[in-house]
Image (cartoon, rainbow, N blue to C red; front, side, top):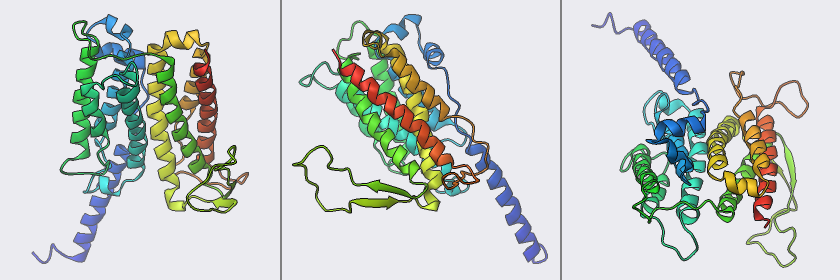
Length: 330
């Protein structure tokens, strides 16, 4: 027995295991491809007429995006406690970005899209689905994140089934300009945060504009009038992939909005603006050919992937602000 359990044998075994874990980790780190929303929803629908039901496409896209997050190679990795998932960080960051967009849309569906006015009753299925998405993304037991998000999918599918059932009037989806604008305002804040965090990959001097525009405004504690922001080297790739996951999910949600809210967007002459946002978000999903996220300085020799991503997100966010203003016009 001892002749087999020598240092050389143990070292070779560990090396082989590390190689296997590395290969599995590389495969599990492949991001889901973008998909044709209209085609995917039509494949889900039991009837071609379902896609014309207000809210059916948005709800189906929310379901599809969540399923792809959970069922991609390796499954859901953020809460893995064993190798090789334990050692991966890019894909868990991607999952968290997508999850944040899923949470925002599910909340908007619960408090806005499914309600006709502020005094109306919340939809029971959405009341149950939305809190399930808020379970800690790293929870691995009691409950596990996957089981909670799976439960949310069950309630969303029940809500979707009721949308197309003419005998049930309790489940509704209202394609109104004010409902859409409220959700887009939340998306603006998400994209603004991602843009700032990505831009801080290089030293960035930021003036304190927190109270700008209101002479009477106050804040809890004083801060310096100018700060230099710099993202930790260890967080660069995490920020990049979190933003990439968020924009991946948002891209599909906006394509669904283009279908469900077509009449509203055309009436507001805002359809072109939405399509421009979609084009900018499609650019965030281009292939990354570098084996690692580079962080060149300004106009230096090396590329800075974070700044490129921040540029696309900032342009999408600027167009999103214009879209919100168009929806606010009469």
